[in-house]
Length: 249
Image 1 (cartoon, rainbow, N blue to C red):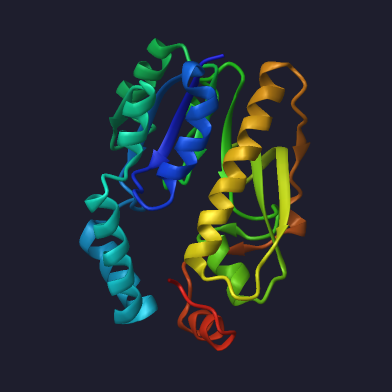
Image 2 (image 1 turned 180 degrees about the vertical axis):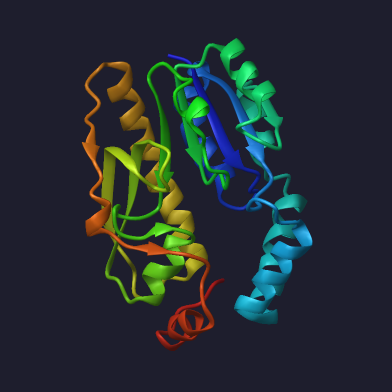
């Protein structure tokens, strides 16, 4: 089974995810492609400014320090792929015709989206023979949308989760093939929560991939009417997050 990963070019949380997955699955991974960690039509400057306006100077300094530390230690998805001999590349648009042709040339059976900020269109979704998966850091159908980890902490949830599903053209919608629920620690920062969530995601994905390979993967349609959707954090939500004693870093 040939697997292709589409991910955000994130040097903070995703290298450890790929370290865990490739340690077990490197031989079946045809390639890992990263895209800029930006939303459609957004520049790097606009993304930085939005983060600063939302979370403030202290949080922004913390993010810069994290990124600098990752670079200083050579921490990246590319470095992990190189250690395991997995092809790695950076692409701008996962729906571009030339990129779809590249995927066809690889003969991929499964495409896995990991924190990829681009919405998949029908042609990409239908391209892999065994399906297109997305990993979402929440107990879907609750907390669809952006930054579910932040919203769960801001809303005082006691449980969180990871959901893996076969995608369709709607946002965070499709058929669930794997889900894991875990407790939120009372003193956990958002940074620590994300590290733990990514580790759980990696383990769950390995189980789901084995199920797909063995032809026993379950498919349970998500009921979006029973869920919730969140967009970029509001100032009020950030205040609640901090009032609850939570920190980003």
